[in-house]
Image (tube, rainbow, N blue to C red; front, side):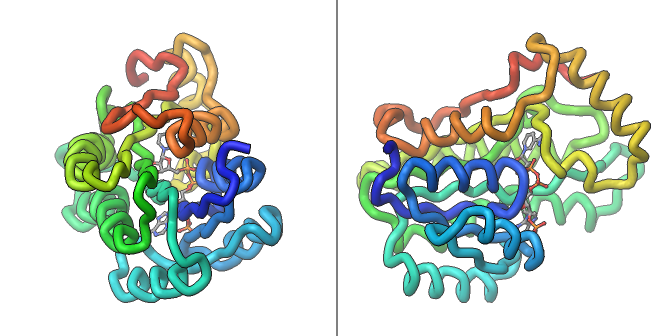
Length: 249
Ligand code: NDP
């Protein structure tokens, strides 16, 4: 088992890529703390994950909730070996018709929330820990209509490289996994009709050389690699798991 005795925190561990990663981490011997905002899916996730998981309701943008969360994690887990800062939202911010609050909210969750998750985790981290941010291929390729999302994910890359320098004296590695289009509930968390969503999915698949969306289990395997000692000399990289995505529809 690749994570025997390790303790991991996964933000947004109640859905999609975060939940699949929690399942794989537990299978590989870890104990896992998952967070999210929605109590119902947190309860369902912890039921699915079993006794090696604990769920905590916390919004990554809420500093009081964060303080409370990390006090509970310190009590329940003592220390952490892995932080997967995965919580994120997508949302349109088309140039010419975007409200500032909508733009700011995406940055607050995807970028600022990820930084302050790590900031709060630092005192609990064991030397040799692994931090992974969940970026996106869109942070490199861009996507029309998604300037804030692309900026938030591109920001994670520079942020990870900076934090990697800060924490290197403790042999803590910091990397970004950059998924391409992956089958998760994020695609249905907006106002699109099922027909529009199906059309969009077809167009996106046509920009992926492998011709299909990724599966959460495929992402989880890459995240396990970055979390485990298998990647002991991999630091400050952005690891694309995107089927070779070449562009946006
Ligand atoms: P999901 O919507 O299934 O998961 C998003 C998770 O983030 C949920 O668990 C959600 O929990 C949590 N979350 C969102 N906002 C907050 C918040 N303010 N505080 C705490 N938790 C929050 O989608 P994915 O699994 O696809 O997304 C996971 C990550 O992967 C995101 O960062 C996304 O940008 C990235 N990604 C996804 C791609 C895809 O195609 N699926 C492609 C590239 C990157 P809750 O609802 O309970 O708050």
